[in-house]
Image (cartoon, rainbow, N blue to C red; front, top):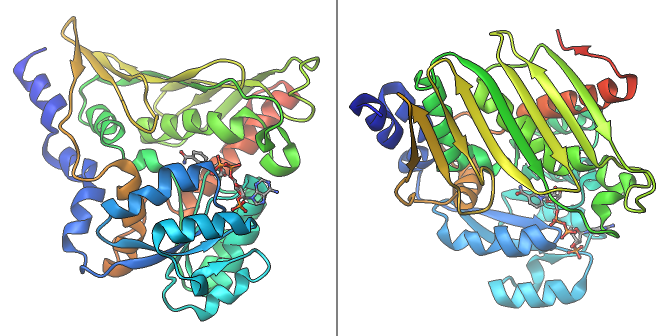
Length: 367
Ligand code: NDP
């Protein structure tokens, strides 16, 4: 790799660096006040990934809990010093409107509950962070956006990779021309889904692997491409004799075509492990594996006939803390939201088009 390329990979260049570090730098100008979060749904992701991260935040603090399980309210309330007055059941959820300590509601419930609990939070006058997938249909996502707009409150989707430094660097490398003209993206996401989880029940999940894990292939293809697809074609493969798949899909692969001629080949699977992407262009490529994991990202580049591993210094804030702080930063300073409701809606519309293409066995035009 030549010097220019090495500098580009390690440090970023010019305008590229500016946008690659937006989440980290935006915090610098925000007042030191911390906004209060209520976390709704004390399941695996909320308790293991999200709640432990408030201690790393500059603009966010955990002030309330909402759960259908009294023992969890007791346990996590004690662990995080949340007083009984700030612990809610789903039955008294709407009374959060009377609690001025709660600025933001973070919805970490099964997918089918995202729209209802986000809309009720907006109606209670709170800003909303909602987990991916934003909803189970594009119509629900539109209703969420409308509710937040009507309440004059913000709505953000938990796309943590938009705040992860390797992902941001990959985007910058593509933008800076490191790979030349991008021609092909491959994005693969999957894991073996064990029987009996709500993710395999369409009423709770809205769909199979695409809703849960394939959405990472879709969202990554879009942020790596830096443009929106104009056509897609999808193929589903589900073993209907596998008792896991009563009403959801296992494997659904899709190809996105972008206006520049760039193609993205995307994998979504509930039967095999994948977590990788690569952007190949006329001069080289940038790739990651794991690409969108909680930690341990690995990144490689190829240019001038040489493949090199890219090691980035530890970030000031990890992706979880940066995501949590971003919504308060946007509230406090007025900087535009990354991962807005509109961004979530784009994915929901594409997910519906992917299902339609697989069902009707034909390409779907998106323009
Ligand atoms: P879990 O099943 O571990 O937790 C969901 C929680 O929702 C439950 O523990 C329960 O909490 C509450 N809940 C309320 N009603 C129900 C119900 N009918 N069935 C099941 N749970 C119910 O799921 P995850 O934490 O893994 O996922 C939650 C959301 O977060 C999903 O939308 C998922 O897509 C997203 N997610 C995002 C990730 C990311 O990296 N951005 C990673 C993992 C998940 P309680 O007992 O407190 O009521």
